[in-house]
Amino acid sequence: MSKAVSRKSCSLRPPSDGDYHVMEEWLRPLSLASALTGDMNETITAAELKAAHDSGAVRYLVVVAESGEPVGMVNHRKAGSAGSYAIGGAIGDPGQWQRGIGADALGMLVDHLFHQLNAHRVEFTTASYNKHTMSMLTKGGFVLEGVLRDYYFLDGQYHDRTVWSILRDEFVVGAKAFAKSSPVEDVIPAEDKQQAQEAFAKYLASDPPTSLRDFADRAARERPY
Image 1 (spheres, rainbow, N blue to C red):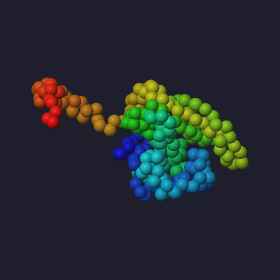
Image 2: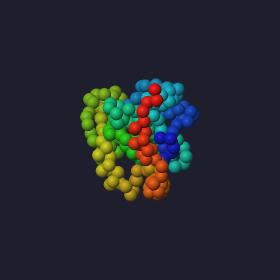
Image 3: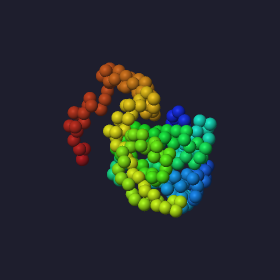
Image 4: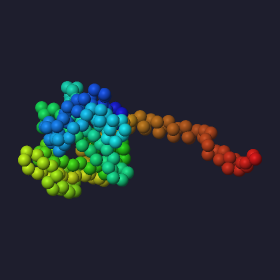
């Protein structure tokens, strides 16, 4: 994603160098955000985040609130066969939770993967104790694929990890159902595409010189040596 896209509660944009340090702070060990992503005991530095993004191993996008402040991030990476992606994310500021920002951010990311990167399958995993993500996933769209038992250890006990996915045909059904309230955004406006196509059709109708006109002559050429 090379430019910002937006929905009601937030927008997404590519990260700048300074954003990686903020992301490092959000995901620090024992933070609430890292606990909800299931990575509470893992340390990841700003340099590691930037290196992963720059290499293409993981692509990060910054979640920006209506105020203009960065409040979280989402990410995607290739997983499995061509056209398959795994996604993740976190709203780093607890004050922004329960405002629909996380759901809107993940929705825009899913739109981007299917609408621009030709995704076939998008996978998302979350801990069974994450009520914010569970509330979003159980409202529809994603399909529960499995439960990994006792995957996370938190607050003195084990918790399951749940695995969810959405396929292209399921995305299309949802995109049609919410076309008015949450339309999938195009990079190039439909009107611009139509004008370009009309100009090209008009050009072809004038019988211009093309590579097809003298194809027979080129095909009949003999090697000069």
